[in-house]
Image 1 (cartoon, rainbow, N blue to C red):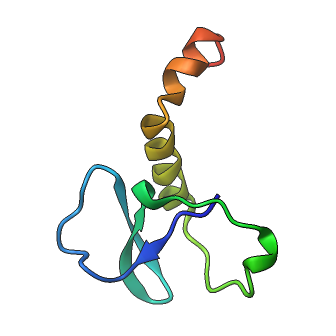
Image 2: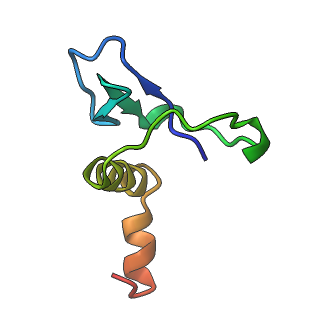
Length: 77
């Protein structure tokens, strides 16, 4: 899965977006636009998000897919 990043229209942030700072530019991760792609399509690494940014993205993904309820039912959290 890939979460696209953008550095455009960063003024307003919606519930399904996470602020990021990549390639020396402020931006945001667009959680509502996740895609599944083949690893072969990834040409080169452009940067890396911080652990804090990745945790925020994971939180949003769990929320969007309602995975918290899934984990609670299986007593995993």
